Length: 170
Length: 271
Picture (cartoon, each protein chain N blue to C red):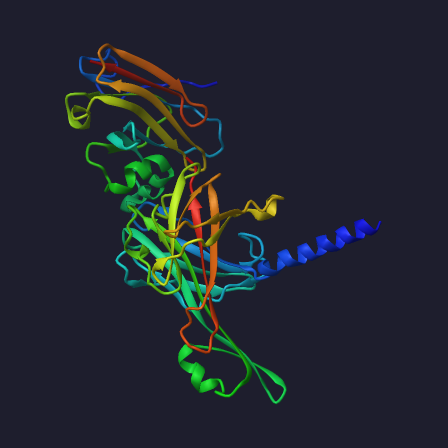
């Protein structure tokens, strides 16, 4: 039995998506394991050629001294290959601490940052999670850009991720 | 009955014939990781000679001639070297971002001859050959060999300074970066012999974990006219890739032929 905790990360989370907004919901499932560590999670937008079009957030153990938490970033192996290995940490405006069990809402203004320069085409929202002494899971939600009407879709993970939802308002 | 016997004999002969080229054990280095992140990455490497990949069951690989190349191409250090009953180990501190190469390259001349009816055997370098092997040696047989074994590991973003061939012996020139390999994807590599494309070269690729399966799982590949080949990795894991070629490009005239070999261990990640 999974318990869902609703955690509000941004002030926008509780309200419906505003105009020109990309809202991403990431659920970190409660797991019945002896040794639990919060997963590392990367959320990004990939282009048709799988290149990273926008890094939305990267969550890792930022509290360890000497930035030692970066040692396991490569366990998010698709993200590491597509983008992580080109970055320096912490990543300005992108990286942050790990997320606790529960549903997390993140929202991004499509008129700002990397989303503002997204060219028309086929994309996918990608969420990758890797957990210390645990497993790894990667989920995708494909979408076309720009959206003409509200886009709303979700997928469900099996092990390391719960529900992942993407809502885009034109 | 007779035909069964004949068939058995043929089978035995075949078996014997097949085991001959493989009689030499496999020589390998196995890195603990090849794709690394973080502030202070290290890898540890096992090095051994064995039949099954990658198990320590025969003899350790002697670490003489071991070289570490940092991402700038400068020589680095192989720390904490130790040799046990079945394997050698050492550590490499990846203290710069980029791709490191760990190599063991060598070779030499082997000579056999007879002196007063006694068989003599000599191993050494091309430079010492004239000094140490009698010029008038009877029934002299000389062969030259060149061996190279390499592994790669990358901290952060892959770089290619260390991937440039030296131009000596048989070498691998990665087209696909050796630390960017994923199951289900095709990777392209080029082989060069003395810096020139090694066309029609037989290359063997064997996945590790032999002990726990019946099928060797060997992929027998051949390079094209440009010395290139493409391999699609069936599953994630560590793979051993090996090639050997014989030619007459020897460094001393007494040697009739040269045998050049190359092997590497490649890590293929899961998608």
